Image 1 (tube, rainbow, N blue to C red):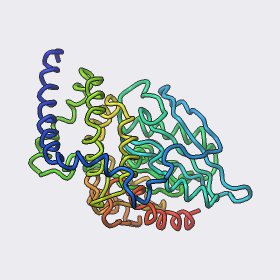
Image 2 (cartoon, helix red, strand yellow):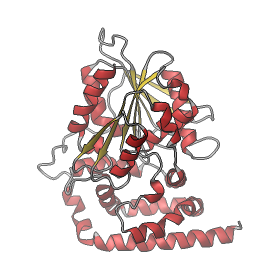
Image 3 (cartoon, rainbow, N blue to C red):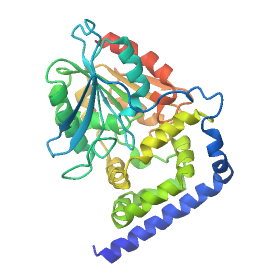
Image 4 (tube, rainbow, N blue to C red):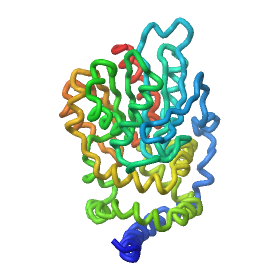
Length: 357
């Protein structure tokens, strides 16, 4: 396709996105002016929480088979407490980083019973951009394999994935089914999907969602033509980005402003190139058959009842494929359930880990 034609189609996509953005901006006009007053508001339970980097015992760079450098942090169990327990490996989601599991890391490190492995996915956090091939879920499965080979060469493993991280685990299962039941002895899937993204409405009307869907593949071309411009626009419209993060990441009507800011900061650090290239593969993600590798392995599925990005129906479909899995629906929580409702998630996660360790 010629550059002029690509530009024209990307321009059409941009116009559609622009119209949608204008509508959202109008709807949020009053609220946007109050954003800065909301942040650090008295009574916010997390206003003094030191979000960001957390202590670790080991830090390393794992190079995936395609040459991508992956940032890894490891928390060791307390001396004399490991007792041969499985290593828990955390896989974060789209436009986020390992900070996604802030409260789970905090709780499990305090208990000191397991070795914990965290890493940033390609193009996210402190990991490098994908060095070869395409930005697809299959490549993420291979990146996970590289992390496991480097950090857990022996012993049992429990995989915990959120959103795209859960899809990464599914891709890994599709490529390496022999690991499950042998090395991988437990899986936790949070706010994820086996392949209904083409039916997701993102909380919009069905008409708007259906009209927007065909433009997912065009966003990649738009980013190539003007990624830097889009990045600058994101900075200029940071208040709107904050409001959109609150709308689509959280279920509570008035979530902690500090927590929203933490999530939005992870979003804003993810480049437009990474965002657009992953959006295309997320839209096409379909790995229901891969779930068969998880049969016979203990699985916990967690989802918020007000998750607009991967609604409850996505988790229910996973349970249909894995009828022996446990399903936990957390009321009034959105997509970042492990942050928004950390106490409830940890109250289910820790007993699950104890049961299968």
